Length: 324
Image (cartoon, rainbow, N blue to C red):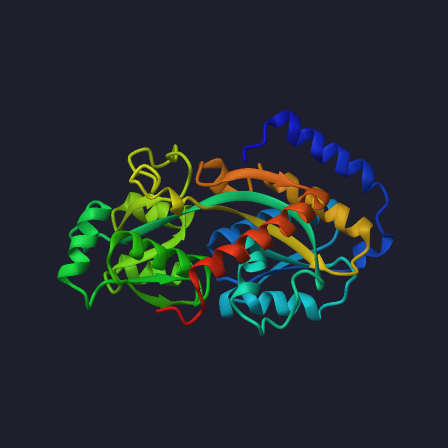
């Protein structure tokens, strides 16, 4: 949802009042933000923007640690293993928190008991893109090409069991074609192969694909947003194409270890929300994602409701990490 300036300012001021007390030992610690994906993607961009604001708010050095692999789980495990002192945070797509627990039984943590929500920073949609070397300009032509070239009909995602993995299979079902899933350790790695013509398609956050789409190395065929993007006005939504069930948006969240002092959570929440519309976050400035700041209290409600909704979605289609 879009947040107007008045509501955004009100949320920041309210959170600031609540966080008037901050431990004096902050200057002697380094704040660490863990990201479960390689540099360059949206979670990494968000983490680096949040880091700038945390550095100023906490008057402490802040580092972003990329721990790619296992669908972002490695970063979550690192945060769980850290002390609950307010100097370690997890920046992750919502699907890492509310989707993966319904897919994997051995995450190494329990999202409902091992972490506490700090803030939502941005909200984004997803897109499906194909290599410019695939002779198709829309989904119908791509489906026809897949039927004629079944050995090349494939798509990559940020990992087995990910929401983009599930989405690609749902899309293939809607198109009436069998798409082979190829898991990677991050969307940028998939994008490199698609742009190079080594893989036919990719499902990823739209902002990850926009630059290559404009450069002509990949071709975005549809987005999961409710309305067309101002950055990609010629690209239709799945809903426009009669596939409204493929409409999907999700936020990028910041979480802390359970037991973290509330004063630290409030201070971090303010910094994260301020980062939402800042110049440190190019994806927002360029219109590739929208600022959607939510504080820790709102996030608790959102996490609970999304956890239930995603669980029902996974169960309804019988999706698993092994789904081909």
